[in-house]
Image (cartoon, rainbow, N blue to C red; front, top):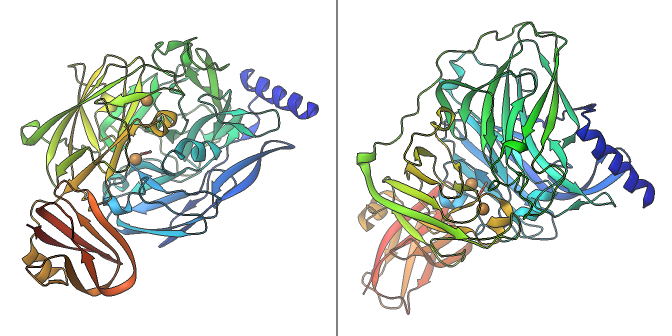
Length: 553
Ligand code: C2O
Ligand code: CU
Ligand code: CU
């Protein structure tokens, strides 16, 4: 054991003296009709000669970048070769609840899940990661995560770098703590910085305008990114889409789960070498990654440290040489359209890893839907943080716009569509969003994206219900029949298409019955004992789902 311990110590030390000699790994980009991801255990050498047990999605660590096209359908098959349950969530994507891959959508060991959805999101950088109940942090820590890049015509019309791995680079930043035996420790903070799984990474960038797609894939650490030569980032996109025009800034905070696309102008800089830094010394004491001595300790907390080196090399044959003046404007819903304002009050006092934090005094319960919203409606959510630290709050199934941070408009790079927002202690953040995806018994989560807080129940659920569903529509258009009407006790159904799953939702959108059926065109549902009210019967089949209203009285 001794030599290995020394070896790791030596490599970690080299990280802080900026010997960045490992070429940055670029995950392969796949542009396929159907993606197959095998989630499995692996052994990977982050440091030469040191074996680390990892999980990966068809890779030793992390997974391939999935290229999706707006307007097309996406088909992704997940096969679980782990010894434990997993799930796979398309973070930021607007998909129906049944395809969202949250904790209810378990993929058992040895089993598969086939996710199919229309790509509705605008061009931006999204990602996928597992989301099983109480195991998200652990599985992500072992290495399960990957990029999703959505392309669309609006983005294609702009003169932007978009040759993957040449002038357009993904970069997921993660901190990891290595144990003396080479394995990862499961700890809120790490003292080794990995970019795309590469420690001490350098990236060769051509001397022209290049694009970095940055993702904070860390469990808890928040980064205050900057370049050591004083050069600015030109932020062109946030979590869920392009900004109206590039925003230049010399500091970019990235909280857990957040993405930013930035343009860096290296024109005429061939031969230069610079460092992408994180300025931990600038983070307030309430932000994980600052030097708050009350928290779990880490050699990187509270200090400025390099994330990776950038070496500027010869330009390509057909370089992008200018930062475009205008990009694309995504318009936030009008506040006058909002039908409801909800307040989400965060409380609790705790550590970065061991925190017990609540939203409106509640903690996660898989069997409780905490909010029910109407399909197509606009709502305003005020997130108020009365706890002792900052939390990166994330909402599934939508992109939101930040209307206000503490009564002020947010900084310009936060003004596009987003799905994660860092809410510091005593901050009030006002969000607006339109709910366009139905949950049909598979509720969406909203939670803190500090993965340890999330697994520690800092998560609630909401349902999106369609108020306009009627039985006539079901009979006429959805290819289903239910009988007898009226009925006592049980209900029969038939369907034109083979059905894989049957659900019955109560008026709040909670699934009170859910049955997986072996591809059948008829079945029966037991209604005995249900309180009276208007329920929704859903038949899920290969290409979609059929609804019918069922009145129990
Ligand atoms: Cu990125 Cu609920 O997750
Ligand atoms: Cu998500
Ligand atoms: Cu949190």
